[in-house]
Length: 111
Image (cartoon, rainbow, N blue to C red; front, side, top):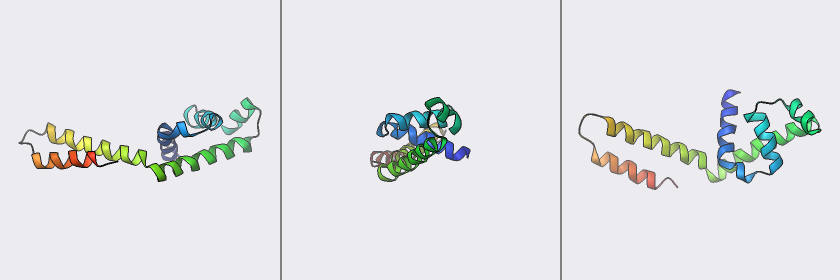
């Protein structure tokens, strides 16, 4: 469950602007503020099922956005390449200029 929550939170960070105000509200209350479905339903005087349906719909939408736009995947690739660059630069031996150029080229081509 923690992995799913982390993934939804990351996807939400990338795609929240594509959601409706109500979708953002319920998602933040459920995933960020860790309120239960019942607590959200009571607070907004709707059924627990309505909140559940909305949260599940948002999860599906976020996954669809990622499948189409791949912003999180591209971000992860960039982060991995930057970590590799940092590691190369921190090493005490001579820099592998060819490898550095390859990483920089790959970074430029992520999008």
